[in-house]
Amino acid sequence: MNESFYDFAIEVAKSSPSKKQVGSVLLYKNRVVATATNLDKKTHPLQARLAERVGLHQKIYLHSEIAALVKCREECDTIIVARVNSQNKLRNAKPCPICSLALKEAGVSKVYYSTNEGFLYEYK
Image (cartoon, rainbow, N blue to C red; front, side, top):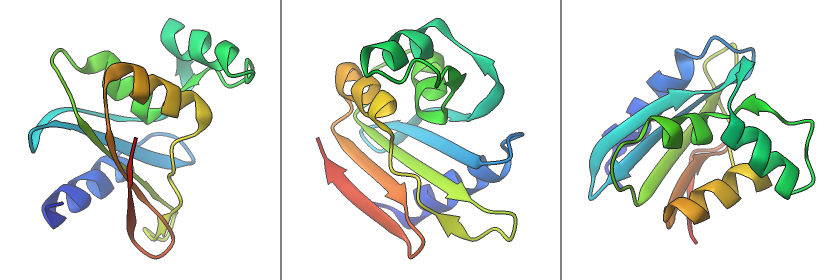
């Protein structure tokens, strides 16, 4: 993965208005197709439906992964998810069960996410 995509995901995360600053960058064939942040004061019907399906009905506030999928108007195959704390240090941003289901159903097979030490990759 191109390091500049990691840097871009970190910048997206820093733009989040939420206390937990999380940002997602959706790609298709190494081209950015959508970006989004988490929103702890906003929801979306897709977030609520998926939360219900995985038994986390209280998790209705919009996660960055789902917000990016909602914005995406074309095919996507990869997502990079970054989380930063108030000191701009990376934190764990592994997609939760709700987001994992959404990504799988959208056909996103390559998932990169931040950890406290850097980025990890998962193939779904």
